[in-house]
Length: 355
Image (cartoon, rainbow, N blue to C red; front, top):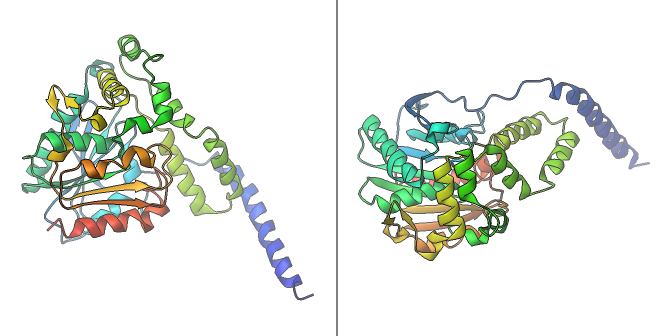
């Protein structure tokens, strides 16, 4: 008889959750998508596919060195600014950083000729100079996510005198031979990248979405099952909808840029082999000598540990650190997991280097 109250309480809880799942499930599909990317900001550059944002401060005292976030070219930057309480941008602003972000829109048909050099030798340098102009400061900290990290590395290696103060990359690959599924679908024996680009101009977002989705074939089904099971949990549902929206909001890639990345990185593995160049300029990551932080995710299905691990030894900095945290490719930077793990680590590392 002593176990009866506990059994009844558990039964009551399960009944209540089942009821909430049904009630809230009916409203789920009719409700509007959650608002994301709502932190107040000003657009400093709006040029074709390129956007540069400056976020408005939330505190009176601000660190001297501004922070520039560089988003991956396949996704939109609101993963850094999901919602109040789950926004890296808000977190950094509240801790006194002056925050800027390079974000991307879908390239127009006439932007199909944008190549890797356009991003590394034009877009990023232009944004860095605009940040300096806006702040009046001579240097900047750059934080790059995924392929935004690759672009940041290439820019930093080729611009040692550009005023880079600190560099951090998150889930950034350098050994593309260790990304087996991407290597399989882009295998040059079967994948005619020249024909695709010459025919379509830009690489379609549907093709990129399919490639990401193939990395976890059952991931969407499993995610939907978890959603149904936890429909009673408002916070879980909200976080799921935001991350799911971002994960499906894939951008097309400029044709020439896509061709460059496939041939140089996927086929030649040029970064790892030491043969990388941008517009004929050789890239040596040992030229990066500023304080460097690389954060990877323990359960990253997009950039496996083997693909990112060699990076720390390739950087020329004396002050450099590699950290692996629990989480996946997305949850490392956005959502409840990031709030507890990656963001505080980033703040601890960056604060003393931003005075």
